[in-house]
Structure formats: structure tokens, C-alpha cells
Image 1: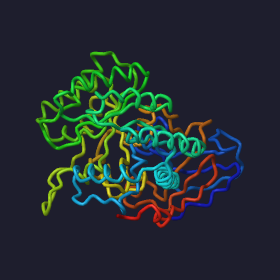
Image 2: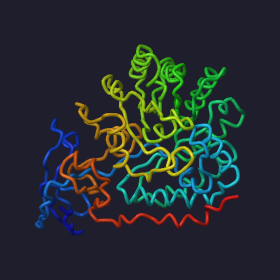
Image 3: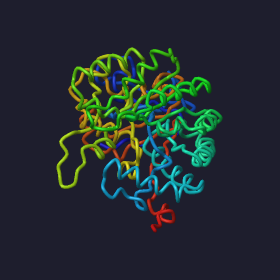
Image 4: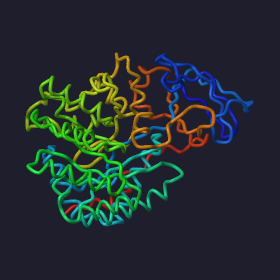
Length: 421
């Protein structure tokens, strides 16, 4: 079937399929009609009706962990080894020499055009924030956020190493983050000073009144468990702002009892978890001329069993940390389902791409209720099997009830930025 043409005026879309969790149903899929009037979902008010023949519909997606400042540098700075260390070295060299405001803005805007065409309505990006890049990238982000305010809701979180947190300039970086309405973030890894680093990080976050978002334990070393330290710190301090932790790869390989005890602590602390399966699958357990044995994805089923809110997100896009991707949340949904065995599960995983990330970040909750904006993604699929079997490249995206052009930007537009040494 083909998705019928949808007029811009008032219209009733009849016979749509929607994940049951979006309309308060226990069913995997529910059949609904949606009326669109004046760019919003309405109860009544449209005479024109279109038979949608069971096409699946979603509100626009929430991508809560991305790296818009790194995106699309692969052609000029590839990861020669495909490893985590190779990614760090390639990005460090590229950022040091290339990340002027014009370069960051052009790549960030290109990425947002992709996300918009794919049907994403809200994004949180991490921004590398060691000086002097903090001044450059946060200023660019502020401008881009204003430019895109009517298309994609944008947030940013700082990204610094835990070693940097003890330096004298860290409070200044945090002040920049606060001045732009951002989220304070850092990467945790084993360090002789980790306790002092976490203590100072939270002290600065509380002083500035900032939410926090961490990259945590992005390794398959079973002895690494900085997540436990973070969760305990939140409990001990009574820190009451949203806390997000991402990656958590080492949970998948550490002894089962330790992993589950750590999750009990995470649940007590009320942390939000975001899993980045495509990037982790790409980087983790990579060795020359050896087939990987481990997936790198964190233990999401055990998390939802404890009531921990789990989300999935794109992470990196065409940069040394992940050579592929296009900020397409349907791709993330397809791959997360396959990598993490989300099928054959009682949990409604659709929440992990919509309600959960929106709640974690404080974005407006994606909704199909009357009064919500008619920001919709309609797919040429009648059920989850059909949805996940194909890339849905013919999807229809409506913003305020009007079909947008989903033509993706041409990579050739970035060619002037891709010169190599």
C-alpha cells in the first residue's frame, strides 16, 4: 500500500494503528482515528475523511543523547582502528584544528535537517566543553537552537572528562552551561581521584542549579563500576534534579550479582538510563581480524524490571565514535529491537523512544491526545513486524498538520568542510 495523500486543511485520518501505550491501552496496537484541525489534534471539526488502511502513526520522536558538534567529520577524520581509543584520538585532533564556529554550525545544521526529515521533534546534544571549545560551541548552539525553535526542541549538555572537573576552570565552564540553560555533564572512568571528582562535580552542579547527564562505564572491563559511585552519591546528597546516565556497557559483563545490586541502587537513586546500542556495538569488543563476541549494550530488561526509566538514542553520527547513522529514530528503534531483543517482551518499548526520554529531559511529552500539536510520523506499515522489517524511507512526517519535505540533505553540501591534511 501507499500512504494516502493528506490535505493541509482539517481532516480526519481513519483506521490508523498506534502502539497501545500511547493511548492508554494494554494492547500492543490499538486502532484509532485522528482529527487534525488548525495544526492540532482535535476531537471533532473535520468533514474530510481519509482511510489510512491501518498505517502506523507515532508522535515525533525524542532523541535524548546525540553529539551534534562531532557529527559528519568521518570523511576528514576517520577512526583508523575502529576502537574507542582510536575515536578519542581522531576527535581530539579534529576538534583542536577544525572546530571553529562556522564549521560546528554547518555540521550541526546539516544533522538537524536530517533529524527533522526523519521525524524527530526534540533532541539533547552533548557538546565537548573543554576550554576554549566551551566558549565556541555553546555560543553556536545557542544560535542554532533559536534558528530551529519552531522545528526541533533542543537541549545541550556539557561533555568533559572527570579529570577536568578538578581544574580551576571547571566552574567557568559550568557557568557557560548555566548561562545557556544547559545540563552539566561529564565522562566517568576509573581514576584515583574519582571520589573527589564526583564530589566536586555535584557541588558545582548544585551551586549552579543544574541537571546532570553522564557518560558512564563505556567499556567491557568487568571491573569498572563507576555507576555504583554515582548512584550512591545521588542518594547520599539527596540531589533532587534529574540525573541521566548513558552507556553502562560494563554492566553487561560484570558478575551478575554485582550488576543487579548496582541496578537496585540505580533504582533507589531514581536515575534515568539511556542506552546507545548502535555506537556501543560498533566500538566495543573490536580487535583486528577477530570477530566480536560481545554486544556492548547495557542490561535494559533487568532495568525495566526494577522500574528504571530506559531510553534509546542515536549517539554519534558519521564521526570516529560511530561511522554511520543519520539521527533517524526509527533506525534506532529497529536496531535496538534486534540488538537488545526487545521483541517478545511484555514491556511497551515504544516508551523508550518517546515518553521516557521526554520525561528524562523535561521536553513536552509526545502525545496523540486532543490539543496536542499534529506532529506525526506515519509509516507504510500496519504492525510492528512490517515497521521493523523495512527502513520506512517512504514515511510521511506532519508538523502542525502539514506534510513536510522529507528529502534528506546531500552529503556533497559538506564537501567544502571535508578537506584532509
